[in-house]
Length: 389
Ligand SMILES: Cc1cc2nc3c(=O)[nH]c(=O)nc-3n(C[C@H](O)[C@H](O)[C@H](O)COP(=O)(O)O)c2cc1C
Ligand SMILES: C=C(O[C@@H]1CC(C(=O)O)=C[C@@H](OP(=O)(O)O)[C@H]1O)C(=O)O
Image 1: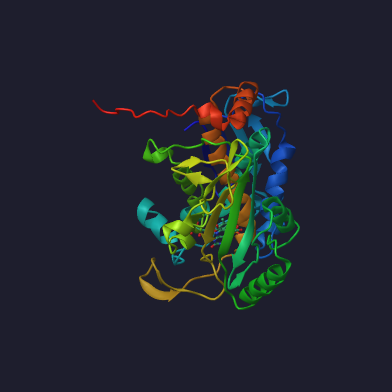
Image 2 (image 1 turned 90 degrees about the vertical axis):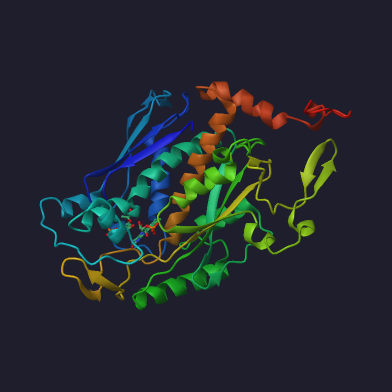
């Protein structure tokens, strides 16, 4: 792994912090690049009251000098505005775990006597730091013309109609919408479903599509299981709170098709190769093939609901309802920038691995050479070969 991200901090503690290690030198960077992405993470219909309290802004505490990355670890910090409402105050004990959250598993694993530490660290408040680090990675990828985006394609029972649309247009249409859905009709229906869930004390999950454009051929590898590109991407995206499903290209749909209809035929376009379809989602044999990268993830409906679940109070062993804590209702639109950030982190990691180099200046010519590689450069043999004597 070339890039490493560590985050620390609790949801209602003084601040969240991150260290991003391995970012090459020479990337122009200021807080505004990161703050733009932090603001995106706070926006979206279905958010709870906390997003009215926070106005996330980052402080860059290390790794940038004279407006450029130094190649040293980046140290990032964002304060929790809500902390002042907790500091010095006694908080009622919490002992009735919410099914579907980290309360029970966290308490069992760490031996907590109150569920609070489990929910403080497992909270998706932590994604503030993923988005901060991911903003740096997105900005880094942009120096190579690589763009990463995402949008909501389904929430509750509503599915967006996004067939045959250009990916960047979908992204821009989604950004202009409070539901982050690029299909205006579906966006309206989604808003109504989220509102109905709020009114009935429930929550909703959904699905998000993610893409990356202008990737070079050759990211990832089949030579070792943990270097396969889809495996690296799955790790990054499945690590986001409440993400429970992952698909590359048309992975689930083609599992129902015969092989002759499931793959992307290879054609010639002058002296270069082209594909008329992209069922593979831009990855073959664990390696990027130069087509757009297409991924889809599924997010479960969140565990905290106004209508109670059945649970057991661990303090006295009695069955009873869960107690409501302030919460989002449907964070699917807000999860889009989080997933984009994790995708950018994973792609920046494999790009640095592929190109090598300690500075942007070293990497850029290598990237240009990679993009220019042509069919005739392969110089394939046309005689039989004895591979094993
Ligand atoms: C952006 C975002 C916001 C979230 N907001 C909430 C929330 O307000 N309430 C809640 O119960 N879960 C929320 N979640 C999900 C929980 O953090 C998650 O379910 C919990 O950490 C348990 O992890 P798991 O779902 O992966 O098992 C959110 C997730 C994301 C990505
Ligand atoms: C704070 C954020 O999301 C939180 C994620 C979250 C959870 O359980 O994951 C629970 C809620 O926290 P609180 O109880 O403080 O309202 C969300 O607001 C955020 O995204 O910045």
